[in-house]
Amino acid sequence: MTSTSVVNRYANALADVVVSPGAGIEAPVAIEQLRAFGSMVEGSHELRIVLASPAVSSARKRLVIRRLADTMNLHRIIKNFLLVLTDHRRAGALKEVIEAFDIVLDERLGYLRAEVISATELAASQQDQLAAELARLASSKVRMKFSVDPSLIGGVTAKVGSKVYDGSVRGQLAVLRQRLQVN
Image (cartoon, rainbow, N blue to C red; front, side):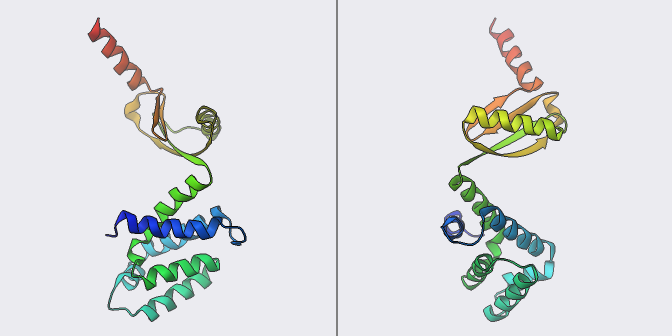
């Protein structure tokens, strides 16, 4: 387990390079390529062992990463970043670094993260409408994450940054219950 400060250091360093003028790679492409590589590593038990094992030489790990990066047509910045992680024995923290990089990029690009939970699956048009309304309320661009929780009974809850909007039936029932107990 790699500490959060170390993970954030790598995520911030990569973000510095990606958002710098003349980087030659757009932020969405960078995170997409990192996620694709991370998914490949997560999906291969052998690859995880090779990258995490101290018994496998750094040179061998670098060769594996170079070949995979070339096969996947990864941008040179992403490939070099993966090599740096390997050289510094941080390949085992790749998943955490990717998650932190995604958050850092959103912050730097001015996005707030919104977590929306609905009682049932929302149609694409409803998701778009909700995204537009939350962006208006937050006065910012919003990156949406949707999930379903049938215990809400109906409606949705949305958490944008530290603010929570509760439009669920369960939430309304809780407010009603509290009011009835007070009276």
